[in-house]
Image (tube, rainbow, N blue to C red; front, side, top):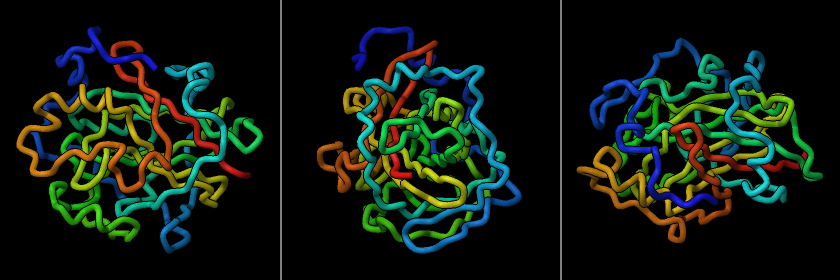
Length: 266
């Protein structure tokens, strides 16, 4: 893994391309309708007709980048958490939606139990913004009670949708989303959620953590940390540990690239 150090990714570069949204405010698009949810409980499926394919042209990651992004052993399910939404299919590659933060591309590859790729697998991702806010939910990210909610789903009460997206894997089993490095909220380590479907059936729900050396670097700036009432939890102290996997993070083309393998039993 490339270690963070001196590079072209300056603080100015960390904020480049993002709209001038004040700290603690929520940018994003108000969407008319989310995809229908087709099952309940802790693990949900979605109606996935009409989900766009992740385009190979312009893709940042190559298959070789996944050689160190975790072995192709089966990924472990973790709880869905309270903030999952079957987001509208309009939320495709660009999920940043004008939210300020360090630009980052999430690149996830879906494999099966035999280490083969799974083209066409549907991948949802969702994460909080730099200040710990999830779109669709009016919740104080510094509340000490957030981590206790765990798998209890919360109904959306805000129309905005940002840092949520869904795409179908390309011929290499890869999906890519242009996002930001996520923030944190009370009681949890830094993570991004993902859900892998084949058709309308959810095969995996995960929470993927980020390397601490990158967390230390990103959270050294005021956008992510200034005025926060919550303490950032380290990976080693997180309630889910590394059960959902760990992103490999590197710099590519003036932005960060985070890669991970998601392996499902088909």
